[in-house]
Figure 1 (cartoon, rainbow, N blue to C red):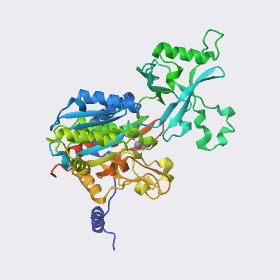
Figure 2: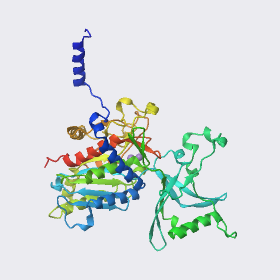
Figure 3: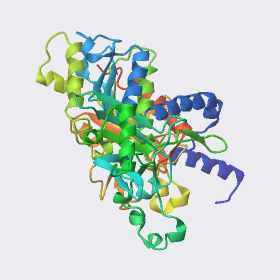
Figure 4: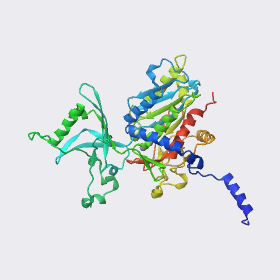
Length: 483
Ligand code: MN
Ligand code: MN
């Protein structure tokens, strides 16, 4: 065939008709929208800085909910269209809903994410003195590269319960005037042996010890004077003793604040975007709904995802369906039967909302470029996650995947899809399996991150914004005409 101009345009048309590829979400329309994207990112940065632990993020979410006229579930004797309700799950999880017009037995629209992030927890008996230094022993939580955590400013958040039961909230290292905490690393001059080790052993679990003090208690008769001085400081400030560490929950997180990244400020860097990016975008989508939805819109925030979703605040806990049942009950004019409660659950539709890996050209070999998510191409949808032949995934159906994609495309939301790495390179699971067990329709989706599970994870602001817009569309329109 001659390569004439006419032929060229015919081929172009055929290509356009038959082929498909994902493109950047920074299209002209979104660049015109830059002010909205940047403004959304500023609010998101505030949420990240205010909510660096699961407890912290739930507290911040409750403050936003109350500012927007949401009320605790136990203040309602019935629930009607337009009512705004929330329920905290044992200080570490959350449900929040706007009651819709439709019969609850037709199902709700749910978006679920997790608010715990990889971190270091203090051991039950953490404090010791060695070589005139006071230190705290830690036990890491979730999947970390341990060498990330040394030689950088750290903060401590959590609760201690005083003798007699009074709870004390502790935050050290976040205020500019606070001291920070710190884990030492070995100087390169003496690291010849260390540098020969596997990266997984360069810094080991028992070496993640937090430096907290160096001034000895003045009385020379005391033993372990530096440790005693630290205990004295804690007692004066919080009224706690060494015994109270045993029952405490104290978490060590990076002391950094969320920042813009890149000369063009296209990215946002912060600790804990996995998965507070999805928690925040889904919560904002709920808060920003202009009209009463047809189907009840329900946001769920889980704890414990990073260690397998167990525990009574994790996604496999009965407490989440239990509170959903309480909402259904208050919407009905009679005591619902067990079968009616099941109708609500199996007829619900869900987005299981978590981060995924963004293709990184610096580490291209671990990903398959044709089936990867990219920073800047919009909201990510994943039919399945898992590892070793899709082990541990819910694997959404073609029908439901298509239904969600059509919803997004009808509303001009930029979306993309991809797998987390090459086949057999590794992989990971999400909470979607636990939701799928309840029988409802669910698909994985969320925001691609660079440097996921590091102390400073990076998202593209347009992906955050498009995900927020996608979640709004889901709450507003998903199955709204199906009664
Ligand atoms: Mn996650
Ligand atoms: Mn994670």
